[in-house]
Length: 184
Image (cartoon, rainbow, N blue to C red; front, side, top):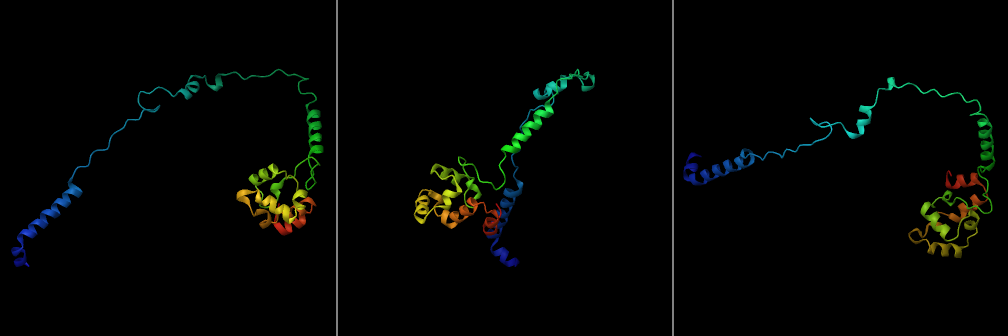
């Protein structure tokens, strides 16, 4: 081996110099120091109190403020219970009964049909469809006509069986609806 090194001493020397240069390039050079930035905020030395805390700092302690005691007013609260009870009765009378049909002028909540979300509900209202009974009465031609106007939602009425769902909901048969299509 020694004879081989003596015969190729120029190549060996060049190899040693190359290894030393690579080692110096990787480990020996000084890396530039990272730039130091100074952040100034309310916690920095010499900074004043934060504006949002000034009111708390300047305010007197809560123990030093005398309590405010209102003067009794006998007639002030008289009759409030009766008013609340009357308002509650009116709300109960006006509240719809679960599963009851909406009034003639009211629109049904079409989002109860699986496959109709807020966007489709709005589009159906634009097309004049507001009741379960309307959807339940659709023929194949009506279904194709509505489907053509649903844009990106085309195919949903047939695929999600809107006519069948609407018929069950229009009839108030929630038991059969939930048995076939799942919970409302």
